[in-house]
Length: 110
Image (cartoon, rainbow, N blue to C red; front, side):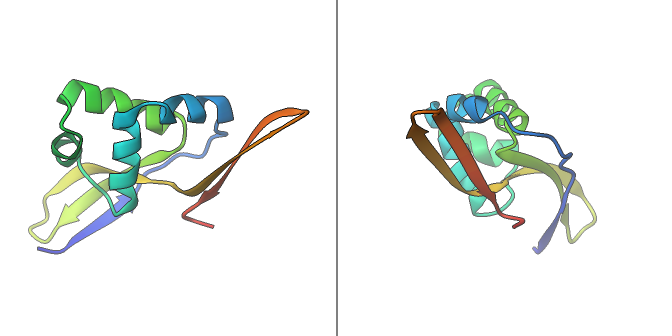
């Protein structure tokens, strides 16, 4: 069964402190790693994280709000479709200096 994904991400400006806060959660980190391998559904992520579906949906929402994850539609060969999620970043760098903490990301689209 071959699948295609169509990205439905909207553009916004990420908040670096929110991104760090989200990454402090182990379930969110597991979701981010899993979705960096390709689009995953919430059901697939629930199995991968060994968490409840409510927890997974909360973490997905946090990752979406922080622009670390995007929502897409995954189409199957039979024409059916489902909502899936994929990581939007490849690298996240944190620099600490006299002027404070600076977070920079490299997106997969760059």
